[in-house]
Image (cartoon, rainbow, N blue to C red):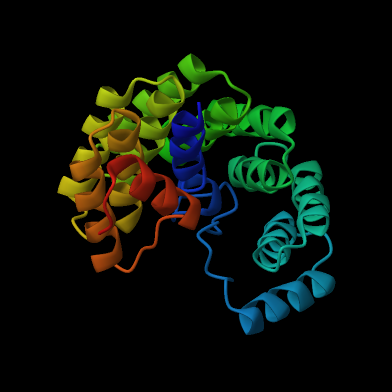
Length: 241
């Protein structure tokens, strides 16, 4: 039981879609691509919105600025206002979904991701994030279905394979998880998260030597598995790195 719990801890801590954006065409011509991630830029965007109170894109960008600062409630208010002004604003729904999920409100997040998909059906990241929200709710088959679609739309996205692998690991389908983590590594050889998560699945399968190999590769690529996992792996394997 402890072995399974620790391997799940390792996997659950490293889902990647939920905190990411990529450039995508928004209905207003403004990208929700995280370009306001610097604090100075965020401040400028917030100020601009005050000067353009009827501009949906400006509210959306101010919401991104708040979200980058961890002000989820303020971000949600801005995204909601953007949606009120432009009801078909797909990226505003998507980004509000991100904010809801970061607050642990997965039902609300799923609704917003679903609306974003309805408006922008080829946006892989909306499927990926909805899949992560389903995983958080324990709906692993729904999660895998969404990750399958994300991979279909963006087959070269290493993060999509990590997310599906995490859902497989939650179902204790560790061989399938390892296959996905290995694919992520093929696509991005320096992806420490993929090595980290694969180590957890090898651990669950009692393949401790391969788990240690991945711990080394994770560290080589500037990652660090959780200390509790390293302790458990050391005890189970009877060795250290």
